[in-house]
Image 1: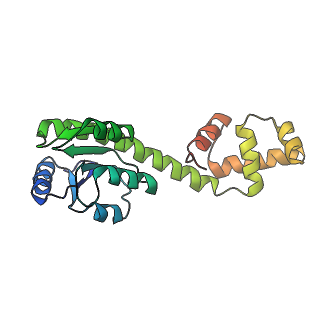
Image 2 (image 1 turned 90 degrees about the vertical axis):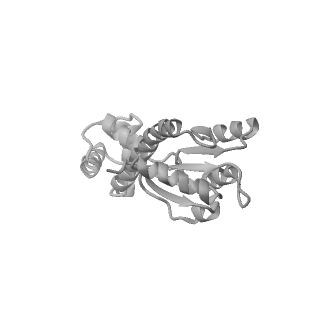
Image 3 (image 1 turned 45 degrees about the vertical axis):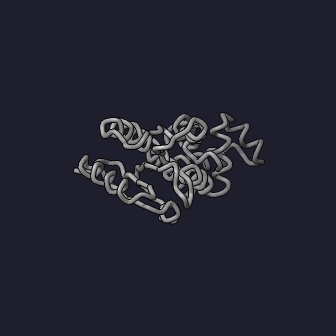
Length: 204
């Protein structure tokens, strides 16, 4: 039975890549392997929990280049760097940019599996966060512009009469909008509404 984690492996050495694939598949991981970092970056985004095993030293693009490209594209997944030639500055930069570990080649199987368990937990957290964001966006898209305005003011803690003053409408109309938006969003309290709004992507 496969684990709930998809592992992407990027290494320009086909022998290393095949060894990693064998090791991972023997431990029931779903694996996609790439000898070309550019090919990995061109792959359509994977929607489920995933992590990346990434070689540091490659002639086409370095692992740090791949990490930076992923960041620019908004691709977020746990990254584990692999290298026979790790150095302190590269390790420090990789970890500073969010890598969860930096393993030396040849990779020890027990150490890799322990690292992948941490990556799995981190990947599941990221996946669940994305699911909450999508759910919030879908539900909020059901609101009219006016309902959304009322929604934001309710979440900010304003009373009906304060919302009525802010939006230039009667308190009765505010109550009507509140009733409609709570039904559309499927929330039954102000705290539930606040939690829903907090689930939106940070840039929204």
